[in-house]
Amino acid sequence: MGDRAVADVLAGADLDGTVIGPRDADFDRLRRVYNAVVERWPGAIVQVATSSDVEKVVAIAASSGLPLAVRCGGHSFAGLGTCDDGIVCDLSRLNTVTVDPASRTVDVGGGALLGDVDAAGEPYGLVTPAGVVSHTGVGGLTLGGGMGYLSRRFGLTIDSLLEADIVTADGRLSRVSAEEQPDLFWGIRGGGGNFGVVTRFRFRMHELGPVAIRRWSYPGAATADTLASYRDEASRAQRDLTSAFIATKAELGIRVVCSGSVADPGATLARLAFAHGVQDPRTDMTFVELQRASDDLLPWGRRYYSKGGFLADLDDQVIETIAESVADAPIPDLEVYCLQLGGA
Image (cartoon, rainbow, N blue to C red):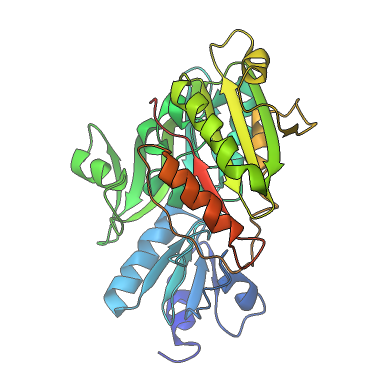
């Protein structure tokens, strides 16, 4: 289709949302995604306002044979939230978050961000396990599994997913759960991609309890020795304690989060064998503040490349490889990030 044709087709679809074409003023800004490595030019972007809009957009894409990309937070490193010459279904206006403290559940629109959910649960002391950058979209994170600082206590994000509203490829909206269409519900909980467009999630929430958060930093030259001590402590840690580290050429940073049933979480962290590094002076950080702590370190518009995997153990060879890799890093921003899992 031509420069305006895709937008013109959508403009006649009686949508409640907004259609932005290549000639519109906001197009260049709205077509961009988190990772600046990805540079694509869709035929049109639809900022949907309702689930009905999503049904119509999916039906139009199917009938016209146009590529369809679904965008929530835009954080996909691979750029799956955009496409060339097709339609981007932008869910950002479906961003409502409603907490029911009595049932300990939260209804989350398909375009909400992690920070929206964290902030909504904070007044009630309730949380749902999720990622560690608050401007990440709930949709992409959840459909990929979702993990973060609370996963050792409460599992992956999908372990707290109770039901979802999803528009499938036939343009129909369905509600799925363990009781309704259980196979499709299984599919969207880590079964891969392209099952449909989720317009609403319902999650179980959990009581957070007291929290202590600490961060220590060490010279890059001490990475190997410090990680050996850290590994030994982490292997003995109960599920209420989780940790993560970032190793760079200049510095090793270790952050530990202790929450839940520990009587004195601050004292527990002070006794850790690797707690001899330079401690971040901020020790009164709330959990919501922790969830935002990496936002500025991982901003929009940088050129990101990453690869990863899972380790059963942080053995001596792994530690040596990490230390040598960051020591030989060609740029200062190269990092090795590792989140402790296990437990739940």
